[in-house]
Length: 495
Ligand SMILES: Cc1ncc(COP(=O)(O)O)c(C=O)c1O
Image (cartoon, rainbow, N blue to C red; front, side, top):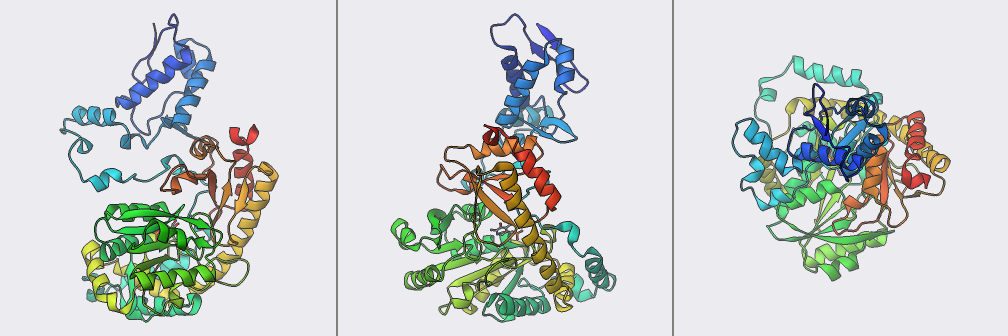
């Protein structure tokens, strides 16, 4: 039996005389140590060279063992920071949880106690192996191009002279001047029909989804979900105890007839009609009319997520579905996460007039109101023209980046990734040949320092189509080209 001990690892034990191949002994040892909590999430593991040296064995079995552990998600690696135990492990390792809890003397771990069935079904942040990577992170705007000096001046302006009123409890629906500014912006740019009384300020679309689920649905109510669709929406409806019915999306958007066949009498539908997440489809006019007619006839609600509609590069801007609604069936959601920055946590929703009171109560119940300081600064940012200017500049930038991404796919991946979707937004989808394991590919790409989100987890009903979601908002053309070159080194593209 050979043992190696480093300052941060418990002794690694392998037996050169055993029938079990060396790489398997090593991967078994690491898996066990991680599950038992001897190796903690984020903890660095030795380089393959130093472990092989300490165990006095060849480097090849160590490399194979690490490769396997990386592919299985026990380890993760980032350029410049070596190999580490995956940070997602605590959510999936019951043995580790038990061990840590008793280690620390703090009693049984929370997960071993009884919690709600709904929260057991929540998956937590997905694809954590992508967290600290750059190209092609989804949903990330060009943060380095954000006018921070202007923004800091506006925030300072209000922070320095905070009135007693601004420091006190605010309106659950939001600060009135911001609601007015949002109503007029949406009227002009998205053809949304509303006045400020119908606007609610939220901490982003995610909260707006929670509010919708709680205000519109009772536990067990059925809601049509685009298939594939936005995992954030899945989480919100899951927490509310709604029953999600996957409804396929085709080239015209959600298939209304399929929805009726699958769940007649559903209470609501969630859609992203301007730029469907993740496929990038724009919903056709005929489908919009069909959906509105269904909602009116069946007394159902339409939750319209207009998350990145500011960015359309070809053709005419597509007006919101809310603007076509004459029966007060649409609840419209928008966010400043894409145009400003995600950490701002400010978004908005527009609700039918007769639901205003119910939504105010729901908003208040969920977290009282949004931070007043940022609402004040945001109002000035819109009123003084910075918002419109920033959108114009970013639109040109993202158009260029999208083009660079398409060219890089052609250059490095040839025809092996089929790009689909409208000329819009900050991300696109590349479809992979049927049968490709896109989750494994995403994990492998992360080992090359590339963030590509797998498409299949966006499906409620497995197996989903295999593909990659590629964000280009926060990446320069040079990073796009380099990222695609690295992606091309993954097995799925080399073979
Ligand atoms: C479909 C969709 N809706 C909404 C959002 C934004 O959510 P939030 O406003 O909570 O940041 C995203 C972000 O990626 C998204 O993809």
